[in-house]
Image (cartoon, rainbow, N blue to C red; front, side, top):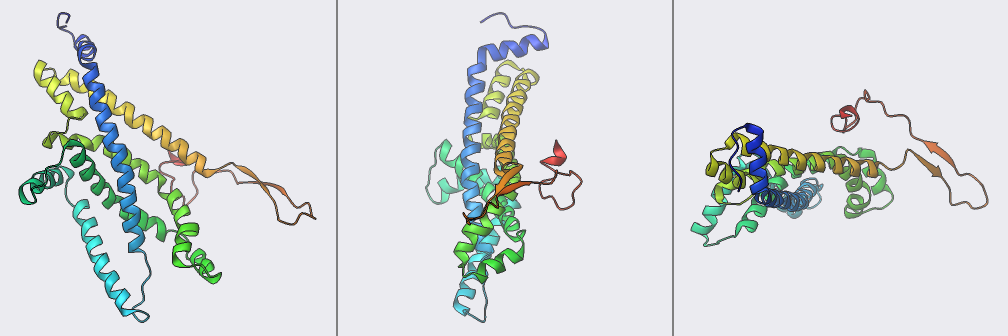
Length: 278
């Protein structure tokens, strides 16, 4: 190793030159935990959100109504518990509690993904529920009028639209998870924050070490944000598309063009993260 520099930038470059591999490895662990946990959390959130919006009528089937009331009680308890307590406390409680009470000893990856996933699922459950309820009631009535079951209604009418509406929130959860994985350092998960703290403590260079960590965190969150924005644009489709009918005897196809987007339009669900943010 070269002589330890005395100036700030010199120490930053020195630390990255000698410990860059450790920083990158920690960032990889952070990103892997965040991505995997966000995917699993979205699956949990969709399952909970869909169950919470299943219509029930006490007068039609009392047993089904009673069963759904019990299920919703536990799902609401899960959502409120994990939304109302900090992830750091949850990590300590689950990691040490599982070992002490149930004799379950999880490794780093298991406990990290489990904790972040169930936390994300609690937030996504409310997002999915709101996304489903935001779809116009007339579409539900129309689907039922042509004989669709509730499952068909959800799969082919409601969920595709709700999914597009909540894409920005899924992106927000991914970015939050990238940053919040730092709390897992309290149970020994060797992610970016844990790695940075170790390097900073060895050289007493907290300012310089966390400068590197902040830059890496920003690169990860900014890149994920841009990728998700591209996915949103792809889901929006083209501004123009051909109108066509199944009547092959008549030439009725034409060109339809969407109206120009107005950032001041009232009721745009994604105004804060899309048009209004550009």
